[in-house]
Amino acid sequence: MDTRLLETAVVELKNILRDGLLATDIWDRASGLSLAGHNQQPVAVALFTRITQDIDSTLGDASFPRLAKYYMLDLDGNHTIVVMNHGELLQGVLVDNKRANLGLLLSVAIPKMIDIVGKAKAR
Image (cartoon, rainbow, N blue to C red; front, side, top):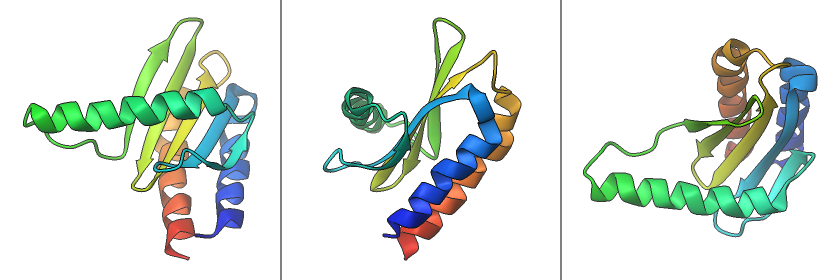
């Protein structure tokens, strides 16, 4: 695992979303240890690890397709959280919808994070 490349992913995400990025963490799913981030949120890391496990389990129990690359939650106050599934790593991204273009988030930022984190895992 190349943690420097994970830090590069965070910098790239900040460059894409600019002041619309409120926080991001890339963390180890098993340990809950944040490996890289911006305005890191340890309580959110624990929460979204649990939520992701519950979603995975519930989808399996319901014979639905498994969770793929990400899920998104629309929050009060014009905020959105995206949790990306990188296998043994998870990544949370909190954005301000008034400052970040959600089209850019979906079409540029998420694919870029999936690519960079995938490369970091391969090293």
